[in-house]
Image 1: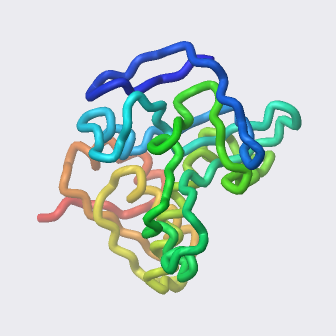
Image 2: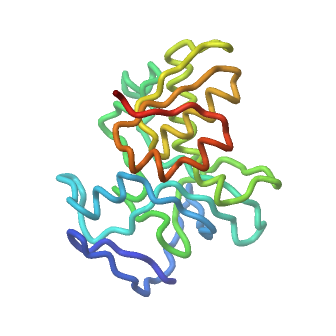
Length: 206
């Protein structure tokens, strides 16, 4: 299979790799879409102290099972499930956390090996290029839940990057009134059409 492999700082190369072999609690997923996260960009630019190279990055994955052709997105984190953090619902703090595209090869490839429990079914009418954004969107929805958001609330969002824009959409879809503050005028200009079409207010600080 073809795969984009991070071999060193700013060294991302297309390679031919054997297809991964799935274990008893894993599946082989044919990748249809994989978004590029800022974490991927940081790994490319600076590496990471815990990153062992070479590695195939990519954790915002949408793909299908080869046999059934059913589509899924991938929850990229695998926690231990029994430590005090996992038992309290704070799996992100688990010391045994392993992340697809970081601790194991990810979705910048034609296929990826993932745990069965990481699969989340995708609706038939949801395009794959949107479905692969499920993970960052889930982060925004979790933030709204943690903030005890209520319909009609006004929400100030710092930053008009991809997650900030997703947060704006989530707030609006849930009945709130989002406003985005972005310090970079160039980013505001880049996202001008999106903001105009969605009706999300955005401005730079004075």
